[in-house]
Amino acid sequence: MRIPHSSRFLAALVALPLLAGCFSSGGGDDKASDAKDGARLRVALAFPPAEKLSPYGADATILSRLGVTEGLTALDANGAPAPALAQSWQRVDDRTWVFTLRDATFQDGTRVTPAAVSASLGHATQAKPAPAALAGVTLTAKAEGATGVRITTTAPDPVLPLRLTSPSLAILAPKAYGAQGAANPVGTATGPFEISKLTGTTAATLNRFDDYWGGRAQAAGVDARFIADGTARANALRTGEVDIAEAIPVAQAATLDATTRKETATTRTTSLLLNAKTGTFKNPALRAAARAAVDTSTLAKGVYENHADAGTGIYGPAVTWAAGKRTAPTGRATPAKPDNATVTLATYDNRPELPEAAQVLKQQLEKAGFKVTLEVREYSRLEGDALAGKFDAFVLARNTLVDTGDPVAVLASDYTCAGGFNIAQLCDKKVDRAVATAQGIADTGKRQDAAMAAEAAILGTDAVVPLVHQRVITGIGANVRGALLDPYERTLVGTGTRR
Image (tube, rainbow, N blue to C red; front, top):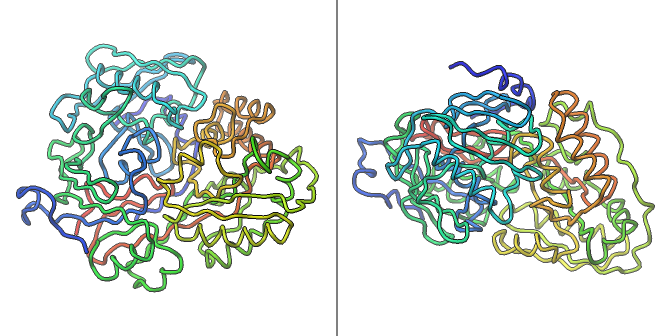
């Protein structure tokens, strides 16, 4: 398949390595469960739906990992945009791109048309809060002819095909959209597996979508359970209750047979986010004091048992070009004495290392003179308060390239005044200018340079303290083939995943 020159230009934008690699087997209908149609996969996921599987927030990656949703483009093995629902594209001018659709069908039986795709993207632009992939970007989509979608941005966006790989910009059928912008992916997506039943925040049943444009999946379906407790996920794999278990805790890794334990280098960084808008850490000098109190090597060696690298920046070693372009943080305040300043430190237990890391941070901050209260909840019960700025400090594990694959996008969504995932509540004019500069650069090397300059400005505020860069452990049964593991953590099961 030929890809236009404009997308070949984008192919080098993010050069990262891709490392591929009691449950019932029922839950589907008789046809989907028939052995001759392929066995069903039993999967344990760490994060239950936080927003009823809305594609616009954290649940978007659940949908993409289960093979439910797709966008116009996808990330290839080198982190570049590749065809998905769009088979090709071309850049018309600085602000306009035309995407040519492939012949595909929604899971409700309707066709994937330019009008349906344009409407779907239009709903995404109206979502509140905005999907992280659209941070700082305004676009409009219109049908063009029988197979084309013309997308126009208000300002030049040289990485639009890369942005459209985001799981939060998945294309859904018209019937998916209800009142007040709600989007329901059940039976309305385009991927190889279709959700037939969602049981609250505990389980989901998926059946194979036989009319998938990319070919019939080898598994008859997927029975997914959401198990926040990491030890329980590891136990379920070890006892044969599940075939795949994501995010195995480092403390449980040794309990799994070496053949079932797969470690993947990822672009995930665990950071300490300090609320720069209200409370104790509104004071830059106290943020500086907190940053100075943190010993990241203790976390990497102790909490993560050497399954992680000590934090060096927003981007870690898996972003292979970052280290050579990193510059020292600028504009840092001089640390002040905490004098028992009170701090509420929060994190979640879906990733078992985080509460332990938070406990170590609590001790380090208290040793420096802060008075710390620790709060731990399951992620879906915590995210709203975190985004509302109700905590002084928050420990977050964040895949820095999951939203778009573009290194600048995470900076815009997480650290600018208008960012939709700004847990640090940071609003700094210098940071906004640096990020805006990076967003406008098309040349690969120069965009990377600008991203690192923006990183230096962000780190200079001490609103974020990078702790560790993670390597994720996935448990995969010995009889499972074709599980999809990648640095972006967007994929897990696909057409070739089977047992």
